[in-house]
Length: 93
Image (tube, rainbow, N blue to C red):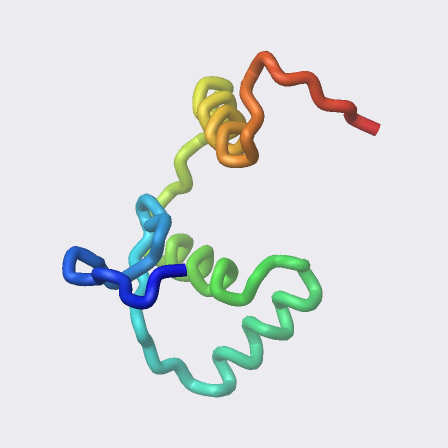
C-alpha cells in the first residue's frame, strides 16, 4: 500500500453508473413509504422499484419490451463481469 494516493483526477459518484437511471433525493409522506414497503414485503420487489413502477404507470410510460437480442447483450455483460465468456463452460444444477 502506498503512503499517499493521488485523487486529483478522481470523480464523485457511482463506480458503475446505472444507465437510464438518476439518483435523486425526494421527500415523501411516511404513509406513502410505509404502504410501498408493505407492498414490497408482499411482492418481493424493492419498494423503490414499486414507487418507480407506480409513477411510470401514472405517467403512461411504457416499459421497453425485452427482446432476445437485448437479453443476449445483458447475459454477455453479466458473464463478462464475472470473468466468464460465451466459450466458458459452466455447470448448471
